[in-house]
Image 1: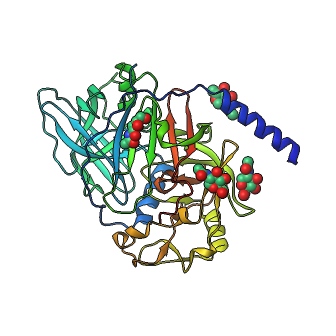
Image 2: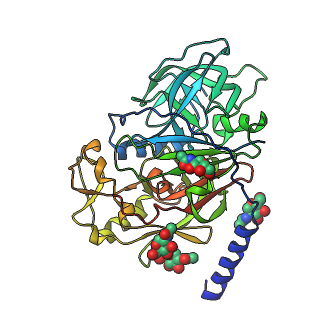
Length: 407
Ligand SMILES: *[C@@H]1O[C@H](CO)[C@@H](O)[C@H](O)[C@H]1NC(C)=O
Ligand SMILES: *[C@@H]1O[C@H](CO)[C@@H](O)[C@H](O)[C@H]1NC(C)=O
Ligand SMILES: *[C@@H]1O[C@H](CO)[C@@H](O)[C@H](O)[C@H]1NC(C)=O
Ligand SMILES: *[C@@H]1O[C@H](CO)[C@@H](O)[C@H](O)[C@H]1NC(C)=O
């Protein structure tokens, strides 16, 4: 494609972006208390993320076959952002991983679930496989509170009987598309095959007007930072700079089953991943690229694989240049500093305090699989993101941290 047509396409995309429905930020927004959680042990980060990627690509089926928008604060726990969610009456507080890559909400991995006056259990089994872990439990409904003004009645939740891979947290708040819950609950004949999600219910119960979640993560410099906020029903415009750029959820499967988007990735002047589908996922720590693109990233940076952490390492950040993610006609660039794992957390992942580890990892499969990248939390710490179910699209914007030197 020559220069003129691509400019026209760019202009067309820009006008689509501008004519998209406006999402308003509304008051008051609510903050939740946070609890400190250390990172989960066991797997190396890259092993965790690759195992998760394999499960996402293979299919997520389990073995069983109007009012205010609200902020919910979340905490980076070296590998996951965790929100405090209250369940039942009297309520028990649970620390739940904020996961846009899955859609069941469940509790009881650490803190056990207790039945209260608002609990109703169906006796049905629920099971979800995450690749990096799994849970099996009983499906119940209960009052779930994400904050004083974000109370959901009769929310379906899993009460874990058995789980693995969730050390240090109590479960998951699932913010993915509702179809991902299909087949997770053993259903009675004629029963519903999907389980309404937290955001489905916030809309159907009239608590929020549009099914939108805004996610603000900030780069972390300690393992217990209170550095995130989720906004339900709108976006928190105090958390980003300039306009949001929206792109439709991709039509390419399996990325289309998640918060999937089309994107191109370039380093310097060379494209290392031509426009292809992948996903945006708060439940993945790193930025994973299909092996062929990852190999080009390794060549371009001269990085080597550190056996201890499983991450790429470079002797000096002077070999790094911007890594550009072209999304919806706009480049979202990870600066050299944004490609570095937070040095304050090096020892938390088994690394050496002053080494430079990189947040780009190998997805484990070549491109062309319909899920060729995962923009994980280290990407989302540099850009505000919006998960818009109502309009089936994902949005991004720059933040004060986009170009910041924090690592
Ligand atoms: C929540 O939203 C309000 C209104 O936009 C904003 O002033 C506040 O800073 C947000 N919360 C946090 C933790 O940033
Ligand atoms: C995005 O989806 C909307 C609604 O389906 C559609 O009208 C629009 O043309 C799509 N935009 C692009 C760029 O494909
Ligand atoms: C995005 O970045 C790439 C690589 O630097 C560049 O070739 C391309 O022109 C940029 N596109 C836009 C729309 O800025
Ligand atoms: C980040 O830096 C780039 C290049 O210098 C600049 O174009 C962009 O506006 C900056 N973004 C923010 C949010 O400061």
